[in-house]
Image (cartoon, rainbow, N blue to C red; front, side):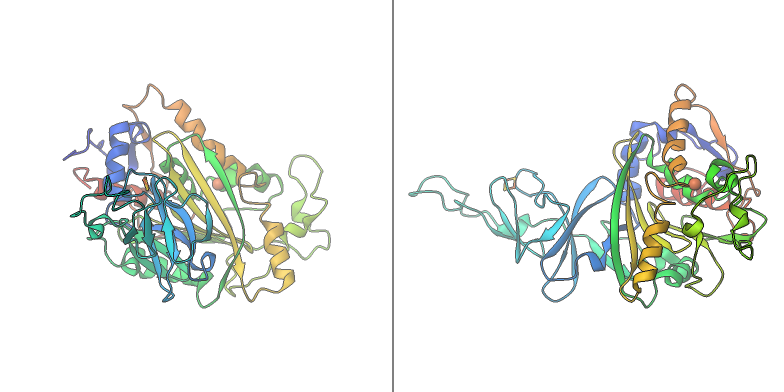
Length: 412
Ligand code: FES
Ligand SMILES: [Fe+2]
């Protein structure tokens, strides 16, 4: 696979060929050039594995990974595939593994650095069988990832040529990440998972496309909650793949009954509007910030509901979306309650985000037979530069810029 199996259409980042969502060969190329390429994948929050021996299993793209806390406090990320005959080593989603990871199949044992330390029946039984005397344990450790940590988030990469994590995120988006997570000790409040019947990139595009929110999400429009006329904008990293969109969405709350939540069409209203009580906890009036790090990590601030999202490909047509709802160790009980209440807005069945879970499937179903055609991404022009308008697809174009570069499409 020296070159992509098809050419990118004319029009640069304003046109995306539908076959990128369906082509099996392209999907294989993504495994090599995107997920095993010079990018970083989010693995877990450091707070999820606080003690030595704590582990969490996850994926870098489709490659199973186990992340484990070492005795010295550092974090290792290892490919969760036994070097004997390929079984998963860690089976549960999380737990404590003591000083070693032992494969269930034939009990090959690895230390927390991934070194192979023990093979049952290595010398055989009664002088018969066993491994060859020259078998070198050192050659058969679990594959280890490079690991980086920023703001309590652990990322990993399989690529020796990946830039340092901080460089991959960049100062612009790094600053937006620190705005939410900087200087505080993160606390996991809960998790959710959902399957999306579409290619992973359709969900990433959805997150980056801010102008669909007031149109697709009828909860917003019904109760006049989100207006694109309110201030906001989109930051896009230089290479294009990372973004942070934000809205300064002031509500008209001076009427005791929260009149903004009366529906536009019929005269019904939210009986309990307390879900929209919010605290300006970051002191800048930004009520919603959605941030992404190429290729598949998302940090969400929707009012006071914070979540980490991982977009995991499961073959070319299916995606698992993992949500980790977070707060901070220093949250008081009222703040934690508020975060959990607002979690009803976003998630697999969120008042707002449930449409995002199916719209990618609408695309996936509609493009069958039209793989030679292209989507049109011209809202806000052709560039992927940061903008102070949210009526723009700049960050979607940015994603495709970095994608095309990393995939080696000519002209990127
Ligand atoms: S596959 Fe792991 S010990 Fe055999
Ligand atoms: Fe959405």
